[in-house]
Amino acid sequence: MEEQKPETVAETIGATAASAAPAESKEEILAAFGLKPGDAITTEIAEKIMSVHSVRPDAVEVVRVADLCKRYSKKAPLAIENVNFTCYEGEIVGLLGHNGAGKSTTLKCLEGMLPYEKGDIAICGHDVKKEPLLAKQNMGFVTDNHAVFVKMTGIQYISFMADIYKVPTDVRRTRLAELEEVFQLGDAINNLVSSYSHGMRQKVCMMGSLIHFPKLWVLDEPMTGLDPRTMHAVQEFMHRYAAQGNCIIFSSHALTTVAKMCDRVVLIKRGQQIDDLNVKRLMSVYPNFNFEEYFLQHEGQD
Image (cartoon, rainbow, N blue to C red; front, side, top):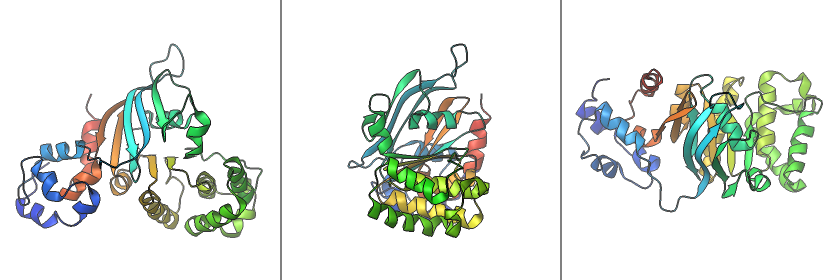
């Protein structure tokens, strides 16, 4: 990848830096690497900028994953090994990797669906193993297979989820109306889930996972099966939801979506975490960085 021309850097480093990295100005970000606006940014410097995490002093931790290891049987190799990351209020964090890299395994351990051999996971300060109910009360999870009860109607399923999380009746009405604006199931919400298309099941699964407005929203391949209008609406909703002080973690194969949506990206390859990238921070000072090329380069390394 070629160096970006100095004049281009000077033109493109703008007001987005302030919103992308609230704790630092664009000048402060560049100064940390001995640069000033107008200087050329090499790929090496760009990668360093992306790898530095700028956490506000008042940032509230939502998720902490430490030294996470999981194997599916005693003789099997580790499916994930020593995965570490922390997520904060207001962040959208992506898990990115090839098929079978360990993204879904990591998320299912995080949610408490899978036991794990080693490591610690805390959600809003609650250990997933020691305080599973308290941890799960702060979380909404959308699985990659969009599992729902197909013999219920859409509204019955959402009401069931609201009951599980003890959402008051008046509150759930308001929240359901807000979610309907995003997902627009319409009259189909009264039909059996078994009659739903793949995309409609994805929608009702998302609505059920959000009815209690969890502090942490976890999604495994969330855009799969959604039509373009709904995909755009969900992406806009995700930004608003994070801006309200919540945290979102999602896995995806779509590099463009990840680069567009995420503040940070955790790269996983063959069960091992190979990077934790501050994408938003880099894009604020280097908006033309080729994230796809960066990912494919690292994905191909052994």
